[in-house]
Image 1 (cartoon, rainbow over the protein chains, first blue to last red):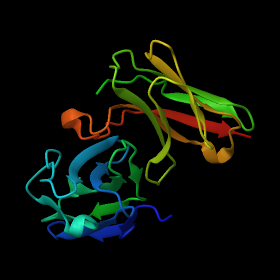
Image 2 (image 1 turned 180 degrees about the vertical axis):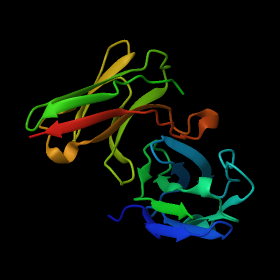
Image 3 (image 1 turned 135 degrees about the vertical axis):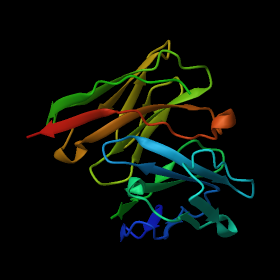
Image 4 (image 1 turned 90 degrees about the vertical axis):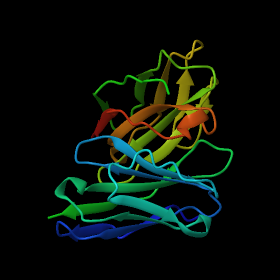
Length: 113
Length: 115
């Protein structure tokens, strides 16, 4: 079946602009995660959604970062007033209820000039 | 979640078995051992996981020691496309308490498969 998809695959923006990154999880997966991976670094957890529960936002690095998940499916990660240090690959993963296995999308490579 | 230790890098000849070790001496009873890999410029790919029994799927085998303090991922016939960073991760049993199954990736093992 279809895996996790993310769009765009690449995004180049200017410092100070806002960007939106999209994640389509695997159909039926109730849990959705956002991570980011800076150049040469490991994955850093950002935010977690589970069904209709309040999201765990503990990994968001600043209030410029926000995310929403509409209808329990598609999620959008928004970064306002982007900074050069926001440049990274942003990865989305989903997981079905009752399992610990997360399946990752291909990521969005964000470059802030 | 328990911390894991992996060698920084390993080499393997194409067609031979690749055996990737992982130490997780502080693992607790309800924590699973998961393996993911990340091929350059792609998202992490799930490989296999286990609790205490050895596991095998179409990609690999996972051997977990009886005391569960270490494990080995085995790629039986490595190909050039298996060149990647391999991550061993310990995950709290479903929804792992307050961790919600958040994955913490270390530096992993860079596996290079050569002709």
